Length: 307
Image (tube, rainbow, N blue to C red):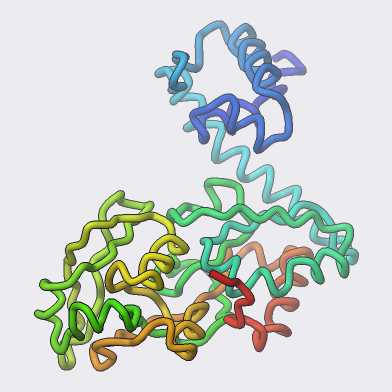
């Protein structure tokens, strides 16, 4: 077997995951042309094409799918083996990749990131913000931050923010013009700003407590967004009623910019937490990150963002 048969396989795996030469290059830290050259070299060694390429898309060939299915698990095992040996070092160091939703940037990480990097200069903290639900192991992350209900049961979950609750809010001007809903049925007569879920592409169904039963309600409105900031702005500017979580937004209610409606229908939710595979607990770099967050839990939710 050729001694260089492993050359370029990390590039192949990243292109297969990203379905893009340019995105794979950005993740790895090389140019798209270098990625393309590496793939051509692998295909030359193997003797079959691994990707279908067009000007707009990249997809695995049948041979590429077969190679990915065999190589990806092996690569993950190798990565874990190196990380295990690396974790035996008493000095925290290395790359620590964290996947977080935008809401965690504002309510958790903006309070700790700079201080953590100063305290642990040998750790490269790589924070990737995206709101879709992902498999952090498959996509090469050490840990993620999500609401408790979104975390797989086989993961270790470290609570960072306690129980939160949903809130319906509207500006005083909107309520003065259109009235305040008194029941869930009244929402059908209001402009409800909808949020499109990145995971499904469908508008989020609002969750409520109807007596002792939790229900999901489809709402209607003339604005659908996939940005919580834009949704919040629409509510503050009086366009309609918005559905949001209390942390990171409570100050708008305290200041009177938003008025809460149907509070009795609010749903309690599990708070934000850091999650990671059980075996990752052996990693020194992750352990110090977990401890660092735990020591600063009292800061979380105190967003300094201004809208």
